[in-house]
Image (tube, rainbow, N blue to C red; front, side, top):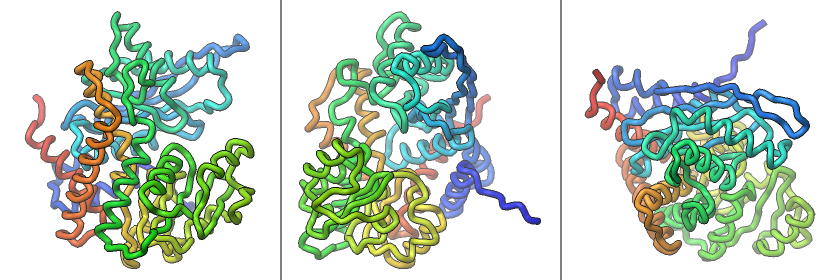
Length: 418
């Protein structure tokens, strides 16, 4: 009996890298180094729980490549994380930073835990002990963590304070995504959704969309989805559908986002909203809209449903929302995809701004940050678009090819030590 083997997250990341390396004709020597991570740290650490017992947690910090600058990447708290996934996310961060031209390498961290089942005190104790365990790797000039799934600005503040206590002075640039009170940046919370909005508007211009009011369906009402819905509405688009993990709602005439948010806060979800009809998440993906923003979890558009997608443009707000086997199907059908590597890069771009502001102890107003974000992310979009058109490849492969070339150039010119 044949045993089914599932491709790991890191193997998928390597496969995307290999495809980009083929496009740019990367040498075998250059490939060998970039296919693997530079460092992987696994830590097992005890935390005293509120009841007095001690629980040992497992965490990781992985650095993929630091040829272009210090490592950058979020920290995830989730019960279903492992080293393989953290390695894949670290590699993705290398390409994401390079694709948008930031002077960073890629890293990622995680702790296998369910933060919803921890008290605030337990969460703080876990965070401070984890930060201490990975402190041999992190720092403003070495590796700068940020929030990810299951973590938030408060957790970043605890990490910054822990690093500062060990250093004997405040080290605000040691993490990004902090509260503004301790060196965080204006505009950071909305940055992923704002970046996705800027790119959606640029892509609609490029595609010469003629609809007077383009329609939008958004899967996921997390940080990216909520801010993108509001900002796209302000830009003149009509958001007709949104969803959460329990279901979706749809109104062809447009959703009243303020009323929907009030309903969500009271009911705990979007389902049952009186001014819309209920749908499943699967049905939302296949609606006849101009723009589809999958901003929930990975593998939502697959080889199975890609042929039924009716949107003209997909802005991939969540990492890996479009599975690898769906890309060629969408490309052949003329669906334009803004891939995750750039679509949700607004967060790391404004994290870079936060780091720069912390280092110089001089802070910018939100308007200036949004202007700089628009400049950086739209410049990256047109560089990737130029590569896509010239090489006759889809936008994801173009983004990876451009990023891999930049990292390979930096790695080559630095040489091999000693």
